[in-house]
Length: 143
Image 1 (cartoon, one colour):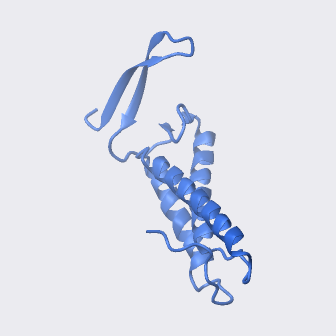
Image 2 (cartoon, rainbow, N blue to C red):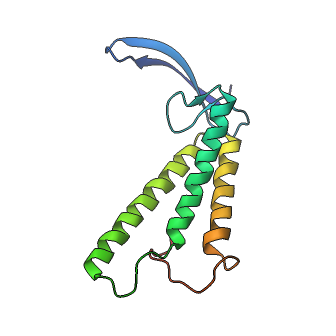
């Protein structure tokens, strides 16, 4: 129990104070009983845990795709291009934060799903292995 924090109180929807137990891990652990991104999700269901791993993997791949995609046509309106790049950057940042928050569940499977999602995403979208021509990405590199 040294690596967990136990919380025992919460407020229900009617405003009454209720007691519930929730264990928050403070170090990496392995297992499908976890909470990732949302309270109570995926819970103790193995199928939902697998879905959560797939979601984290896909989010990490989308972050890599947004980092290396080249959608804007040369000669496009500079103002429209600027707004589009800003929107893409905002989506990329938001998804990156979601992956980070999922990893902060300290679940080993979620961590591996995020790392492999970024790795496969970079391999497919960022490395020279699958690129046909040198394209300039629409967004600057992440810092």
